[in-house]
Image (tube, rainbow, N blue to C red; front, side):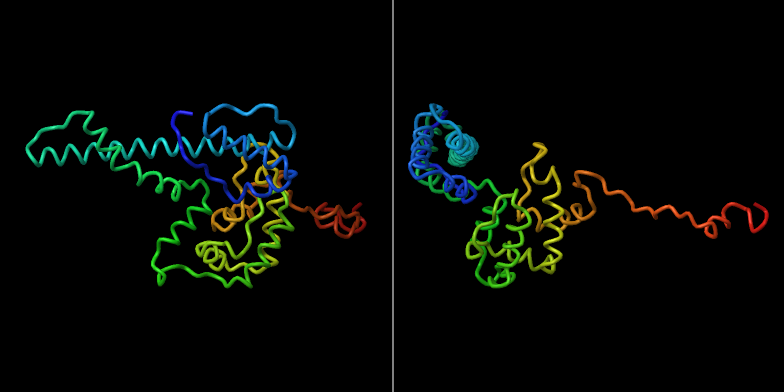
Amino acid sequence: MEMQKKSILLYLDMLPMLESLPPASCGKVVLALLRYASDGKVPKGFRGAEKMALEFIRAQIDRDTEKYRLRCESNRKNALRRVQKTAAMAGEGTPPQTMAADTDTEKDTEKEKDTVTETDIDTEKETDTETASRQPEGNRPEGLPREKLEPYRQIFLRECPSLPAPEEVSLWPPKRRALLQQAKMEPEDFAALCRRVEESDFLTGRSGKWTGCSFDWLLQKENRKKVMQGCYDSVPRKEKRPAPSFDLDEYEPFSGLIGDEY
């Protein structure tokens, strides 16, 4: 690992995978992930479900670490520009690089640790949560009440078993509730949409080409439209043709032969 962090992020969509492991195996996986985040050595000796969970979460840790590194690099550059601007205004010229590095360390050490931990978000769901939490109370979109949201969650769980299960309704961010309200879908319409998704090898990830479909993805208007238009169907839907008829009365107008002529 290129840099040392004091924490790692665990996401709610990791919960089903960890819960599927026996308690002892779950503990082994979590400890191995903490050691990996600390020293960068890839854990060995894991097999089966333990290895699958370990590799899935380890890949997420790598993405988070890279985002953390890029954020710190960006903040260092911003700090350097601030120091150079201050020095120029004071008529002192451009400060040495070492001075800028020291100033950057002093300003960023405490601030960056907290900022990255709270805002280093990887999923659309968590970005919505964070954005809504920063909005003034009076400006937050409320959306549907919780008692009307649970039927849609249950439909998704029943009709889309191949996709990640959305968390409990009590944890839904205001923006998700608002998007569901704006969709104006009756439960039966949402069920038909979910069945269309589950039939698609692409959307469910069975084709191995994409694994980004989720409850939040379906709430986007353009995505729903494409699904219902059959853009992601595994097998193109064929137009139904009328069954062939052997009735001579129906054949005569097209044959040009009428009555005794044939």
